[in-house]
Length: 463
Image (cartoon, rainbow, N blue to C red; front, side, top):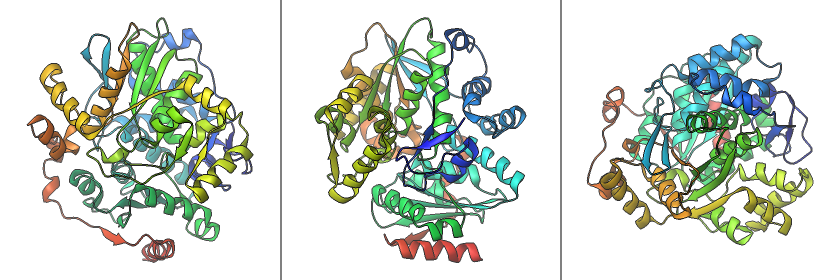
């Protein structure tokens, strides 16, 4: 199994090398050369299996010779051992043919744990084998950072630096990043929004002297292994509701397009997904693009669903690569226009291809609050604001004869103020996190400046 860049001019890599590299050297994102297929019989055979076994069977065809079967099984077992639910990703019913996929039972109470816990184990296995050490730099709108720190803290071959937008994450999200005491993790509060954090991260990867000097690696959803780990729960959910013998649909609250791209890969592998619906908050660039064909940034407006406060959706590049016929030069041109002109126009053929693959919708702040309140009153379900965006859009799209599965991306206790204001109930943190607000914090505030960031990272690594 080989991996190619969406911009067409970076070296083709193995799974391990693509995972450790993160961003391709031409600025693109790695995708598999071909997507492996699972037959209807192989999908049906997943029914009733433990989550870990499904994860192995779904991911193994993508790994090639990078890991042995024993290594991959061991990484998967260790990754999910600390989850708070034996099913790992259980389904609960909201209404007739509408189901919620609970992705918040991991260590940091967000869907990012499914990928990050596994990547931590894969990195440690690969680096222990080679004796190398890497520096991970990540950008987060809230959940990726805490999941990465939880996954990599204390590991012997990794230093982790997480950039998050100062004042634009919830207090729970911030404290999950700033309270771990392990010396190899560093929380950096950047003056700016998430798009600024993500831009500086990409700048570091494109500054090759710095990248090579600190052995830079990335764990944002630019990393293919992140996407691959998220493909698994599409299979477990769909099979639980009768796939492959009947189709299912998914609505995915998303800002960076990674989680729904995982669903796209699941469909390419053979999972019978009828509809994939993009759900956005008021920062609705993905919905606007699918509606108008224009991808234009217009600034990030802070919301009660901060993990979706994004205007530059990195993983959108991966699906553009496919709808443009895997033409790396065309994708590179679009990404250059985005950087220099603030946006681009999707060609007629490509936008028709996107609309055939994805539906979309948006939820305003008031609609999100109303959905939280109504879900509590009529469904007995307390939703985080991001999950509420998904539920609102799913209902708006219509729940028909095909089961609709909405992804619940975070525990409501990660956003207690927003949930309490909407539903009148303040959600409690799980007992294992009850002392979060009394733990000491370690955080460094940094300017939105590439040189200053690189200097700080090199200074910390030298200690």
